[in-house]
Amino acid sequence: MVMIDRLRSLLVVLIVALVSGCASLPPGSSFLKTTSLALPHPEQTRLGHQFERAAREHYGNSGFRIIPVGADGFLTRMQMMHVAEKTLDLQYFIFHGDDTGRLLTGAVLRAADRGVRVRVLIDDGETEAGDEQITALKAHPLIEIRIFNPFAYRGHITLFRAVEFAFNSARLDYRMHNKLLVVDNVMALIGGRNIGDQYFQIDPDSQFADDDVFAAGPIAQQLSATFDEFWNNALSIPVQALSREGSSRTALSTHREELNEESRQSKADGIDYVNRVAAGEPFNGMISGRLPLVWAHAQVVSDSPDKKKVENGAMVGRLMHRSVANAAGAVQSELLMVTPYLIPGKEGMQLFKDLRQRNIRVRILSSSLESSTVELAQSGYMPYRLPLLEKGVELYEIRSLLGDTRGSGQTTAISRYGNYSLHAKLFVFDRQRLFIGSMNFDQRSMHLNTEIGLIIDSPELAQQVAARFEAMVQPVNSYKLTLRPNQSGRSPTLVWRTQEDGKDIVYDTEPARSDWQRFKVNILSLLPLDKEL
Image 1 (cartoon, helix red, strand yellow):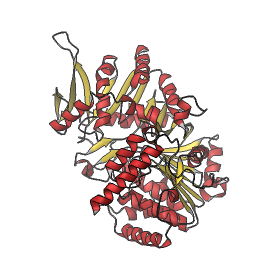
Image 2 (cartoon, rainbow, N blue to C red):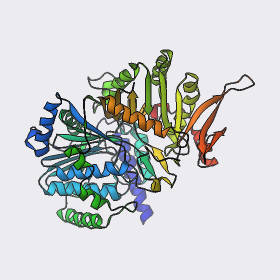
Image 3 (tube, rainbow, N blue to C red):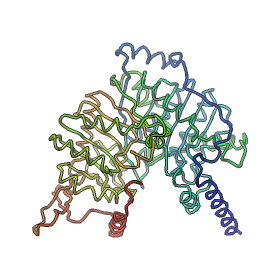
Image 4 (cartoon, rainbow, N blue to C red):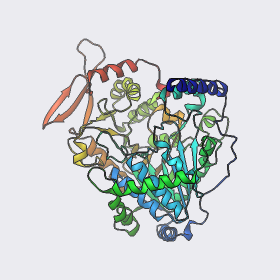
């Protein structure tokens, strides 16, 4: 009987995919929805008044603090939600229903119970079973949830989603990769972290090293404007339009009880994060001045929600990769880059060529095969290594087992599991300016995903990120790629240099978790998939 039901579901998916294959808008696009905007007078809130005064004292600049520690990224989100007075806006590529995801869902619900208007916008490209737990909040009168560019099939059977994607890839390949939290239109958290245990570096099975930047002052209103643009876009569909079930107050009440019980019991990595949230750090330190903010000028760089139409000239809009490339192209001495996926394409290779012709030092930290969690992306990176090194670009690949946790964003205890991966997206320009955001240096971020970030004019913050870069490219934490000349006159070969147990080690064969992993990625590298990666 179960098999018959699944076959029926597959048939429905096939029919929907065939019917909607040429559709430019997702299912539910005809559902009536209201336009809404950010809080018009943030200065009327307590922290809004405080930061408005502070911005005046700092010549109209905004205050920033980088948050490299994964657990602090979680705590700061919880604490920011706790102090929200009027509005709370969340925009994420992934919002998992694991321990931290459910704790954050509980914080969202409690904010709405206090009278805070909440808007949650989530992409539909990487949802997993259990992630839909946040949609139970749709029954709350002060919470709106919208899904960006959703699939018609709402289940989690991979085959069904793959079938729908195959028939409607022109639309479904376009994803919202943004990560943004804005409170009361006066303070924000932006960077590369999604919502989930991995991204807060507390999961022994997988840790993603990343960064957020806390931003307060006038820049928050600019970030809110980008949220409003996505929220009111035709691709953002109210979750009620996609659900067969109506909003149930009973279901919401049950979910509230479950979340409350979990918050009383939840612990991760042996630390009671509920008590740490209640202690108020690091957020209280940033607000009080014990953890001082760096006040600087910054520029919001973001894609328009209709990026595909902007790229093909069908409409006027923003393409953020051009702003980042212009900043990189203007450096005078050094470019540092941290990106988990490095697939530069012709544009990126031309950028690196131009920089090296001007004798600019270019150093890049990316993923090693052994640390990579996306083998397809790793396969797209592999063919670029040799030409990059030949141009004089310095390449480092992060190890999955760190020899020194300084700068890693996590504890020594969690690092011992050897499941460290890179997820940060950081550029440092001449150690005077920096980019932090959601954009990888790959073709998907440049052309297929929408992205958001900040370019901050701050030598202090730039040097903080540079110091972290230097810590992570130590021989005990990374492989440095070099070329070994081939005696027969053929192309040089790659070698991986690192340090283990105090000894310098040189690998002629690419370090991997297994021969099978190495075999798979080598086969995948033969496929012409650059534009999808």
